[in-house]
Amino acid sequence: MRGAPPPGWARVLPSALLAGVCAAELISPEPLDIGFLLGAIPPLAVLAHGPVATAVLGTLAVLVLTVPVFNLNDPGSTDVLTVCFVSVLSVLLSYVRSSRDAQLVTERAVAEAAQRAVVPPLPERVGPVRCAGLYRAAQSGTLVGGDFFDVRAGPYGVRAVMGDVQGHGLSAVATVASLLGAFREAALDQPDPEAVAARLDRRLAVDSAGEPHAELFATAVLLDFSADARAVRIVACGQAGPMLLRDGRAVELDVEPCTPLGLGLAEATPPRVVSVPLRAGDRLFLASDGVTEARDAAGAFYPLAERLPGLAAEDPVTLAERVWTDLVRHCPDVQDDVTMLVLAPRPGDGP
Image (cartoon, one colour):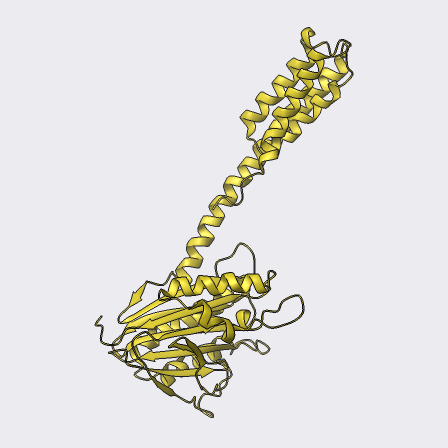
């Protein structure tokens, strides 16, 4: 919440410089004209210390400059006044920096609470489906960007969604919140996954109706598990379907994507629903284009289908973390939002 702490050298340097000047003067048989170094101690203290510590270090610098035992070549009154002025100014700067840091901590806490309200952490299990989600936003310091996912239980079974809205970063959070709200309502009201997709499509169309050049759209994959988790119905809207991990192999399910959400074309081209039977031990892996389109230094795409069987794990969380680690190894400078959703249905388990 407070961000990265100051580096260790920034904390140690003022004290080390003060000790070094004192030691050099005590060891040298002749006076050394190095008193000017003491003027650098208070500004250096501002980098990593608060007003009190900065004031203490500034006071010690003035004492070392004026105490005869250190024999700093008889500094004049101008030198002493300069170090005093720099010390007072450094204390003021340290106070301003500490106040701004405290304000930043508060703002980060509010931002994190708001973003977690939009995309709360997934539970380990929803009904008969174990699940795990991993999200890494492209915009540094944010928890939410242009990708989204959610898993909800309702009267028609467990529904899951993963998608990507136009744009990324904080500018896309409003669209993500709108889509997730529509999904959570539709999961309770609509009996079929294609009806849920139509509700999301209408939500985006309504949101962009007042903007003549909004061009607001999103891609998404919707999954609808049966009550006993022995089958899943899948609807893909402008996005590839999930990969099925079974018997040590990874197979991309043959799901024909329909038009993206928000273009108002759901009625003209209704989405195709694909039903897939499931067995014990099956896992469904969904990834955003931040995974599939990541490239290494040579321009090669990340080979998800090839790597996935070797990274498979029984625990969904472990599987997502392994893929993320392998992805960063392949492409250290990931530029897009990265989202993964792992679903492990357990046929026969009750809610």
